[in-house]
Image (cartoon, rainbow, N blue to C red):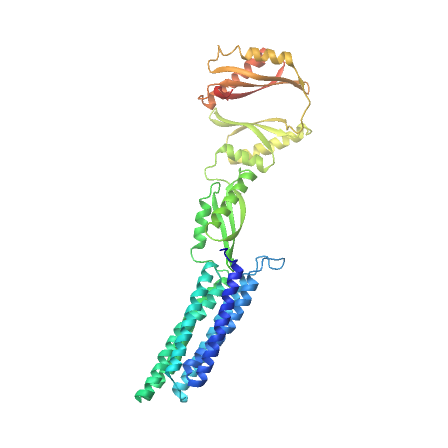
Length: 467
C-alpha cells in the first residue's frame, strides 16, 4: 500500500483530534452540569481549550506545509512553533482559572456536588479517548517532526492524567456521601489543583521548547556535531562559523569553512558539496556553505609563492628554489601579456619579487624570467625532413643512455619563425621522477646542440609498457 503524503497524514491526524475534542467537550460539559464538580468543570474547560488548540493545530499544519514563496523565503514552518506557543498560553490560562476556583471553594464558599458511579464511568471513557488520541498524535509528530502536533498530543496526554486525578477526586466525594464523611468532598477541589499542577508542569516544558524554536535556539549539542562533521571533510582546513535555525520540521544551516588558498574553484566547490552532504546526514537541512581561502599551517614556500601570484592574477611556472652561497635562491618564469612593454612587464615582476621578499627570510635572492603569455593559437608549418632527422638522432642515443628505450611521435613545427619540436620518449616505468627530469633535460640539450636551429624541445616521458 502506498505511503500517505506527510501533509495528508498530518491533516488527518489533526482532524481526528478536532473530532475527539468535540466529543470530549460535549461529555464533560454535560457531566459538569449534572454533578456540579469543580474537577469535572475544570476538565470541561480544559477540553474546550483542547478543542480550540486542535483547530489552531489543524490550521497551522495546513499553512506550515506550504512551500517557500517570494515573501517567506524560509517557508512557513515557524507557524507550527507559534501555534504551539499559543496553545501553551491557553493551557496556562486554564490552570490559573482552575486554581482560582479551587481556592474559592476551599476557603470562601461551599459547593454541593452530586457524584455518581455513572459520572465516574463516563470520565473513565473520556480518559480512554484521550489516551488513544495522544498516542496517535505522538506517532505522527515523531514520524514528521511537528511542534504543533506535539503540542496537540501534549494536550491529550495531560488530559489523561488530569482526568485520572478528577476521577480520584469525584470518587472521594462519592465515598464521602456514602460513608457520611463530608470532608472527603474537598477532594474534588484538591483534584482540580492537581489538574492545574499537571497542566502547568507539562505546559512549561512545551513552552520552553516553542520559545527556543521561535528564538532560533539550536538544539543542545547540534552545533558541535555539525562542526565535527565539517572538520572531518576532505579539503577543509577548519570550521569558522556555524549558524542553525529551525522552521517546522526542517533546519537551515549556514556554515563558513576555510580551504587552502591555493585550491582551485573546482576544489573549493567539491569541498563545499561534501560539507553539505555530511551535514544532511545529521539533520534534514537546507545548507549554505561560505568558503574562505586561508594559509595552511606550515605552508611550503612553493605554495606560498603560487598563492601570491594567484592573488595578483599572474601566471607562473618553472618554480624552483635552492641555496646559493648561504642564501635561498628562488627562480621562476612569469608570463605576461604578449602586447605588454618591457617597462610594464618589469613592473609586474618587481611587485611580485617584493612580495616574495616579504614572506621569505632576509637575504633571499629572487630571479624572475619574463616571457609572453600564450593567448592565441598560432599557425604552423610541419617540417617533415627535420622531424625524421630528430627522430633518428634521438633513437641513436639509447646506447649512451641505458634508461632510454626509444623516441617516437616526433613533430617539428615552424611557429612565428621559430622551430618547435615535441616528442614522446619511452623509459623504465620504475624510474624516480627526479631521474626522469634529469634525463629529459640532458636529451633536450643534446638535441639543441645537434640542431642549433631548434628554439624549443618538449619531451613527453612515458613508461615503456604504455609506449
